[in-house]
Image (cartoon, rainbow, N blue to C red):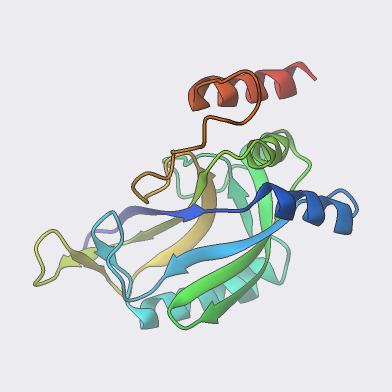
Amino acid sequence: MNKKLLVDVRPFDISRNKIDESIKENDGKLIVKGVLQRAEAKNQNGRVYPREVLLKEVSKYLSEQVTERRALGELDHPESSVVNLNNASYNIIEMHWDGDDLLGTVEVLSTPSGNILKELFKSGIKLGISSRGLGSVEPMREADTVEVQPDFELIAFDFVSNPSTHGAFMRPVNEGVEKQKPENKIESIINSIMRG
């Protein structure tokens, strides 16, 4: 079997009120919770992660990364199997299962990428959370569906701009006086952070 980089994106939705509450209750830190991954369900990339495969890797990730405060994630998805510390934006501080859903608690860091992530959340930008790992896949009976194999190795989760849910970019247009396109809003936020 030939291992390749496997990337899967899920929407990560959080309200403005929850963001403000989190910052207030956590001494200025933004801490968010949501679904990181789902077992036994076909995702937008046509992949199914068997529960046993994810259980094994999540257990390993918890003991080697989360408990040692090394479960760092990046802002945007690199084409690498290594987490780049220059782009670290958050740390997963807790993970647990709820049925087939892997839930996680994420602390957004005060790094340049973490500050961008925080501002994107505060601006109501819909983001996706994406798993990154190495592994092989095998075709299933259902057309356009593959199953991730037991050689899968979880590397990290990353926040990305392309949620896998259809319509996740839709936002109400009645907020604020100036109606910017989402792309311009993201550019504006990134530029203001970079300028200090």
